[in-house]
Length: 196
Image 1: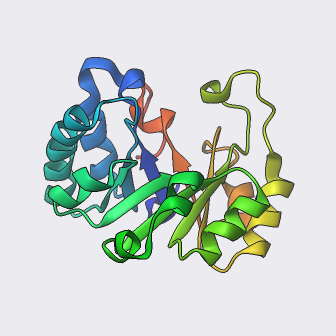
Image 2: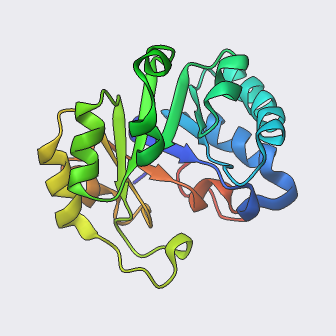
């Protein structure tokens, strides 16, 4: 059974895709994902902004919302009013900064963080990591009971992240998640079209 794209967010990681990064982003955007989060937070802001400009064009051509990560000023310079932040960066925002964004996503790793994000005006949260993932080698996953608790504790959409794939994504939705975030399925070159 093919996964519906209406509840899937593509989270980028150019280190997984190497030289074909923009091609992988285009592939994900063409699949009809709900949004693309450009997560390349290891890049200096100027480089990130340059990459974001290219990804913005891909997303606009396919009418897929692009959510920038971490660099609020770069997002605003590019006319993008959607940002995803680590919880502490979100909590450190002032009211004026928050008003400049239509969508405020927040990465959370505990029920308390999710509640703080919700009460602080977040549009949605990601909760993770739910399953074992290479991105968090050696760190035990938080599991579906954690996801379910987060979903029942906030009144905004919760997206499961971390080790989500075709086999386990349904269990995330059954736990109450609005959708899932996928990285490897979209970023790794050579992965068959699992979701297409």
